[in-house]
Length: 308
Image 1: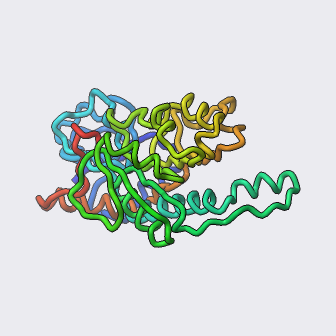
Image 2 (image 1 turned 90 degrees about the vertical axis):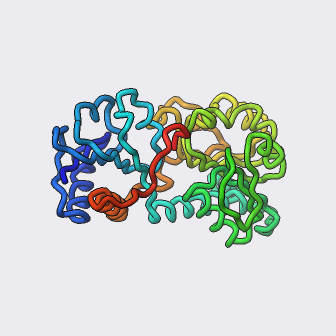
């Protein structure tokens, strides 16, 4: 089997991936440029048109959890299955960042950091975790693991998904657009882990923020395009949103002139909530490549019509 590795990474990052993949599946022949003999393309947001002209291509395996940029390429071969990255190590890292964000908001640690800059010694009121209502948007692998981790710390967890799911959960779940506003009105912290699809793009807008419990916090670890920036800034200025922890943005890196950098109630992370680890992700790729070669079912296939 011959496989192509391509994507939007620099040479050093590409070499790290190539080494990890060669170690995980030494029986595969790897190339870095398109080759008519390629059967699998292992990709990280490749430039448009790069997957054209591969007549033997049987699988596109993404190294990233999100596939919205990949699906936006109009030249993507329409009949080749796409698998997204579902790496348990990445899901664990995302849950850790989510827990840090919720703990910091719940216990006022961002406010304490601001007080330190002013040499202000002022303990803040402290609520119990079960008095803090956390709403998790999205119940994929990362969303579910995050919700369970927060619930294990005692938080009053609820979740919302855009469409119905098959699994019963040990916490309250709302499904569909009509269920969202009532859940927002009962939440102290909203944590976004939704996939980016046409239905969720721009979902976090003026109506979304108006439905929140006044002063509620937002944690966005999913995609920048979920948020209408001007609407969030207006909600922050009006204190309808008390604080926002943002890891993802419309333009990355976030431009130096953007208001988020200097807003007193915004915490900016450089898209680092859960970085893909080549060591564990290469094992996920290896499982799918061996399944493809053996004629077995592939894991984590994307439904193109749903966008994930």
